[in-house]
Structure formats: C-alpha cells, structure tokens
Length: 477
Image 1 (cartoon, rainbow, N blue to C red):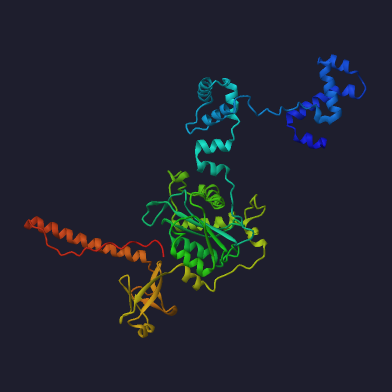
Image 2 (image 1 turned 180 degrees about the vertical axis):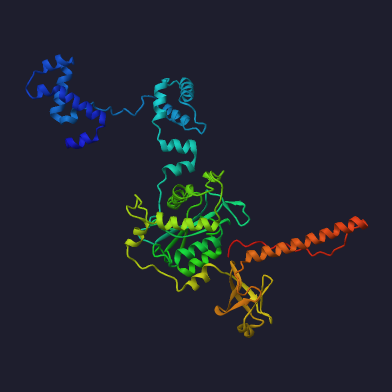
C-alpha cells in the first residue's frame, strides 16, 4: 500500500508518534551512530529498537506508528452480557453507567458469567451509536430532527420557488384609537435570490386576504425601478396555515398556473430562509423604531408610530438597505441575484385580471327588478334589465363594497354600483361595524325606556324584539 495513503489513515497522535521514533532512529539510519549507542542514549531496549528499524525498512514511516489492536473496540466478555449491558443503557429511563453496572453484575452472577468491571461497562455504554441513543432516549421526532436525511427545496433560478409566511412584529404601534397594537407582517420571498417580492402590514391576524394582497404586490410590476422583482412563480411554497390551504388560494393557483406546495406538518424543511428574513427585520430595522419590544413584550421606548408610518419606514428599509445588502451566502445582493439571469418573468394578462383572481370573492345572487341585493345593499346597472329573474355570479372586493362585478354563465356582464356608496371606498368590515353600532345604540334606547317604565309603573315594558345574530366580520375572500 502507498506509504502516503497509510499515513493519511493515521490519527494525528499516531503520526506524531511515528515522527518521534524516526528522529530517535535517524542517527543510526544515516550511519552516524550504532544502534546500541542510540538505545543507550535514549534508554530503550535494544530489541525494541531493532523491531522499529525492521518495520521502518518494510513499511516506511507509517511502520513506526503504534499498531492498533484489531479487537480494540471489542470487549472480552460473554456476548449475551454485552448485549444486556447495551439494552440496559438504551432504556427510556436513561440509567447511569453505575446503575447499568449494578444490574449487569447481578445478572452475571446469577448466570455464572464473569462479572464485568465498571470500566468495561462504562466503555460499552460510551461506545453506543449516538443515533441509537437519540432514538431510544428522545423518541422518533428528536431522532428525525438530528439524523434523518433531509430534502431541502433549492431553487435554481429566479421565480422558480416563492415562499410566503406571516409573523407578528416585535414593535408596538398606535391604532386609530391611540391604543397600543402589535402589527403582523406578511412576506413573499423569492427562494433563489432571497429578494422580497411583496409584503403586507396590518393589525389583523393572518388571512387569505392578507396573503392575496401581498401576492398581488409581489406578482405585479412595481412603480419603483429599484424594486424589479415581479412575475408569476412556478411554485408557491408555504406552511399549512388556513389562509394558504384555502379554496380561494387553490383557485388562484389554478388560474395563474402556479403550483401550490406545502411543507410537511411540523417539519418546515427549507423554510429557514424566510424565517431568517424576519430575524433580519428585527436586528436591522425594528430595534431602531419607537415602541420596539424584544420578544413582543414590554416596549423599550414609548410607542409613537401609526401603521402607515411604520409601513413607509419599512418600505424604505426594504429598498434602501435589504435589497442592496450583500449576502455572504449568495456572494451578491438579492437584487443583483434576481436580475443576473436576465430572464423575462411571466406576467398575468392585466392588473384587473390579477385583482379579479386575488382580491374578489364569488357569490351567487338572483337579479331582481330593483337590482341585486347583497349584504343589505342594492346594486344597479342598466345592463341588468335583461337578466331579471336570472341567477348570476357576483365578485366583490371586501375592501371596497361600492361596486360589484356581475357574471352570467362565465361571461362578464357589467359593474353594478351601490348608489349609497358611489364615489366612496367603503370596506365590508366598516359596513358591518356600522350596523353593529346602530343596533347597539337602539338597544340602549330600549333599555333606558324599560328602566323608566319599571321605575314608575313597576312593570316590564313589553317590546317585541326580533333576535338577529351579529354578522361575522369577514377575514378572507
């Protein structure tokens, strides 16, 4: 065998030992001294020196290393006793080596085996495969996290894989009522370049609408030339949140010819990049803002910003600091990495078509003689006169209930307008909240009258009241 290969197989200690013995023998090997003189000077047996010289001439420098015992990992004890010791050490109770030794000694005495020493038992316990120990002591999940072979999704070009996720931000803001509120950030990130394609900031918890708004910004061309990321991704990779697994997102993905891929439940492999982005936001941006609260706890300074103010600051951070910031793993900035391929992103037909897919919900309604009734609002258009009595599909944007789009047998008919809301942008949530406030005010009036009647007449005011359940405030298309 090649001497260099043998040397490479030796440990650092063994190589040092071989060199030490070579230097000791070097005067004799070079003819400068007799072997007897060398052994006398270094006080080693002559027979030992002769054996070293023979091994050096036969195997070279590697022959001077101390030979390993072939049975150095084998224990000279009954095989069944060794297996018993291993089995005791792998119990879920995780016994100490001393406890294993006591049990092994007792069993060996009963079976007539040679009683093992503590050092032998300890050596067997220490030599167990770490993967085996992890599985036995910590269970399947811990073993999978540490030792399972992973498949991580890796994009080979821009827009091949986009990831999306939500996270509450470690900062307290002031809402419209000057009350403290913690915002949520939805991010859409290109896996290949780590460039943020779109985002959405809100006080509301994650919903399909929040995802749709972030995805709309991500897909469509940006007005700012410093933010070139756009297009329809080939794969949209998310977790199993209800907003991502909704029927609405399935329909959007089918219409855009975009593949939805979900990470395994409890094992978000490959999603560390988008989680790293949220940490970057904390480390480079949020700690500079008033109201910053590490871990979402008590703010370091008094909250001062509104949601719109934070959004403006975050937008500038994204374009001026994050996208032009060189990343060591990429050896480029996210913007450079995304633009380097020089490809043409696939785009939807138009912004209106994209809005229709992402931001509108579909409902079936019948056209009446006075228009279409929806959420106690009436929508009219002259085109509807030809469809009185017919069932139509309406699509609406929950953020703006001033108009709806009307379809009949998959064909677009018209945009019907609510005269009460014409010229204004009124979200459905505001309409429902206004109704609740009105009902609450009326109930207060009734309650005050009841108290007055009871005070003067000693009887209850008989009021016929229709019980109407409050409309739920929508959170998703």
